[in-house]
Image (cartoon, rainbow, N blue to C red; front, side, top):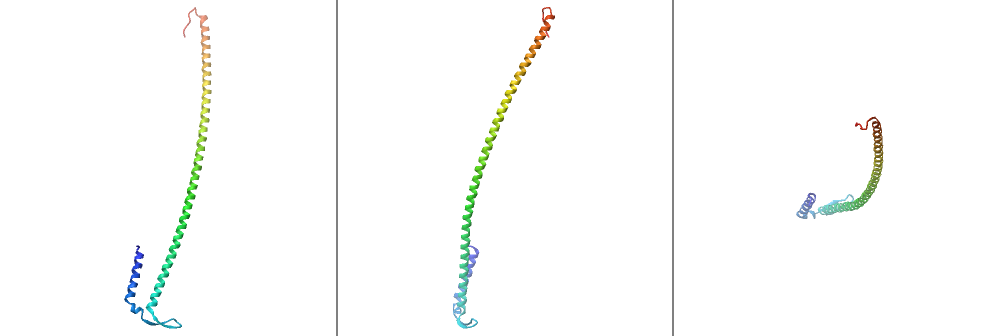
Length: 164
């Protein structure tokens, strides 16, 4: 139990003990004035009845507050659960969107890579053909120069070819 509960029980026990010890005084009649009338009644018993009434009223009020807090807590818990489910659904849809966005981005990158690879292969083929053509032209030019040199060297010599 909490300290407040223990303290409340202690106070109630002390009041009950005081009442039992002084019961004869509580029942003693006295003259009570209500402003417009006077009455012979036991003052202690009336005060004890008022104390019991106030304590009962406070207990009913506390129970009322407790039930309101409990109902508010349950309502807030339900709303929180609904909001949590809504947030989970929104997060799942965001993940789905992100997955679709990433897949389309990766697909687009793959297509760009494939197009770049095809362009590179085509350019390499063109460079290879150009290089072959250049090598052939260089070979033909070199053959022509060698042939021209042979022609120049043949008539000048006596039958022996000079070496360069």
